[in-house]
Length: 105
Image (cartoon, rainbow, N blue to C red; front, side, top):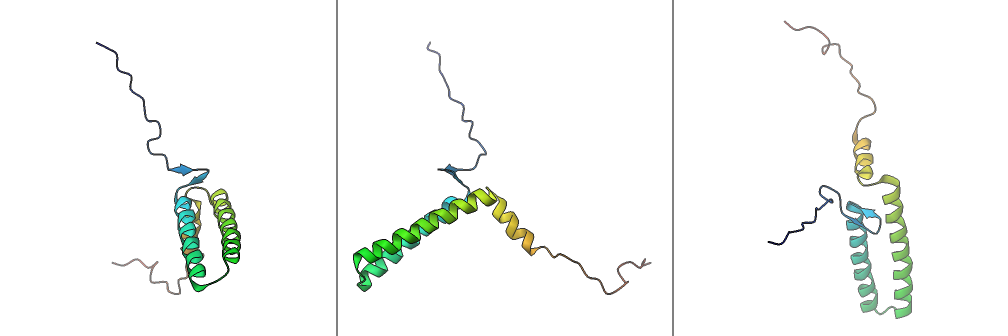
């Protein structure tokens, strides 16, 4: 009988990563690229010069990639969701009545 060699998958429960982007930022970059493709095709169909279309898309794509990588580095994998959730928590809870603190029988 030959010995079987099995590889252990050590990536269980780790988030997906693609060239330094983790988690939802991969989807943001993918959605941005698809929207740039739609923008390019719309500009081309309208009749804008091809070189202008390519220039606009290259500039917008560069800005998109820089912004997505900046968000990924700033917030991390779950940090942006935490920052958005933190904004929805009230800073002060006001109570104008003493009824809450009275003992009810």
